[in-house]
Every structure is written in C-alpha cells, then in structure tokens.
Image (spheres, helix red, strand yellow):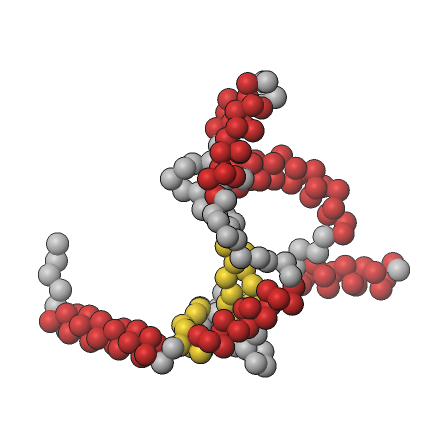
Length: 177
C-alpha cells in the first residue's frame, strides 16, 4: 500500500471537518439534505416543510397509509408457500422456482420516500416507491422476462421510444394521416 502524501492527508482532514460541520448545521437548523432526481444536485430544505409536503401529498392522493405493523415476514411466508405449492404440483420447474424464490437476507418492505423538485415553484416533492427488494420481486422479474417480448411485439406501434421516435412518428402522421 502506498502511503498518502502530506497534501492528501491535509485535504482529507479538511474535507472531514467540512462534512462534520455541514452535518452539525443541518441537525441544529432542522434542515434536510436530499439529492434531487437524477441530476446529482443536492437540495437543502426545512425538515418541517418537507414533512408537511409529504403529508399533504399522502392526504391528497389517499393512496398511501401508514402501517401499524410490519407485514414483511407474513408476505414472505405466503410467497414461499405459494411457490413451493406450485413446484409440488409440478406447475413450475425447479430452475423457475429458484429464479422466483425470495432471499431472506435481502428482502425489504416497500417504502415511500420523496425527492425535491427544486426547478419548480415551491419545490414540490416527487413521490418514489421503492419495492425492488420485496418478496414478490423475483416473481415479477421472472414474469416480465416471459411477457415482455410478447408485449413489445404487440405494443410497438403505440410505444414511443424517445424524442427522435416521436418526431419520426409525427412526420409520418402528417404525411400519411
């Protein structure tokens, strides 16, 4: 291992102090630091305001409720029972079971979080539901691989891939009607 130069050690210590100072100011001032969508830009906002906006969104949509208990292991057990039942009845093969079977070490309950949209007036929040580690994710991915080619084949004429595709389709529409 190559030892760090004096300059690198100095920079590391200085940046560490800066990070601790930022953390302290955020906590002391009741602020929240969030990364905005995919731009990699950070937004600092008042945590009370952030919570009010999140609650207002939940109230307005009525789509989300706070759970009294954690149903993760109940869902996990039901998925295991269902998959084992499908396998015992020979509706699925062993390799299919393996592809869909959730891993106890990696499963998580889906959760809702928000990221700020600082480019819009009032900095509204964008809701994000993270469900990538749910017990049902393996089933979903497996079925998507089976169904996606069929869907893509039949929905291609109504699917717009990107901006260039949209322009080509609009040109074709204006030409052909």
